[in-house]
Amino acid sequence: MSYARTSHRTARRLTLVTAASAIAVLLTAGPASAHVEVEAGKAQALAENVEISFDAESESDTAGVVKVRVVLPEGIAPADVTYGEGPKGWKFTAGDDGYTVGGPELKAGVNAEYSIVVKQLPDAKELTFKTLQTYSDDRVDRWIGLDEDGENPAPVLKLKAAAPGAKPVSPSPGASESASAAPTPEETEPSASPAARAEEKDDDGMSAGAWIGIGAAVVVVAGGALYLVRRRAGAQQ
Image 1 (cartoon, rainbow, N blue to C red):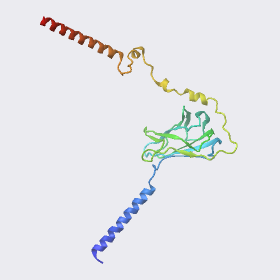
Image 2 (image 1 turned 180 degrees about the horizontal axis):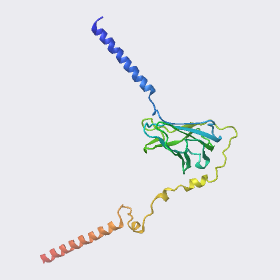
Image 3 (image 1 turned 90 degrees about the vertical axis):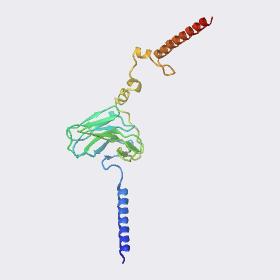
Image 4 (image 1 turned 135 degrees about the vertical axis):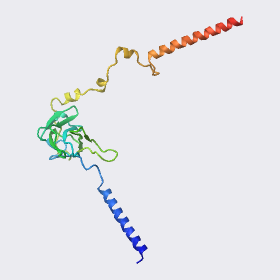
């Protein structure tokens, strides 16, 4: 067998091995390895007093998780959520649109595992729990949805169809109050002072002060032009 033919076969085998390795990498590639897992023993629409467990995987080898902030999906009010179990010393705090669990720093590499109890799940096919995971060094993992690279997925709980005859229960006292307590866009806008309002721009985007300045300049220019006209007229007489 010639040397050229042997070299050709060797090169061909290396090409096949490289291609196979590349295919294997592509097949195993996907969203980031770390993520937040969510599960429930009774994942069914309109189910009551459901315990939902979360497992926020740690991505740091040097800092521990100190806090997990969750935005609740539509149909679950913060007032209808209570704390189940969690890391020692961690506490549950309800917010306007979700809740926060946190406390003493966990060891680096240790996942933040905790659970909540929901008064009743909404009538939906799935629930998305957007999550912000904070470490002791202020690093934040944002598990809020797939980005352009297909990473950082928000945890999603799939629900079975509601049981026959299941109906929504009335919301807990204070649920509507919590929602109404959130500031509206109008309330968050700083009010203008009287002086600032006097300088409000007109439809052309210029302030009243600017228009006064322009008017004064026009008067000066017009006066100067009139003076020159009269002077020339006197010189010609």
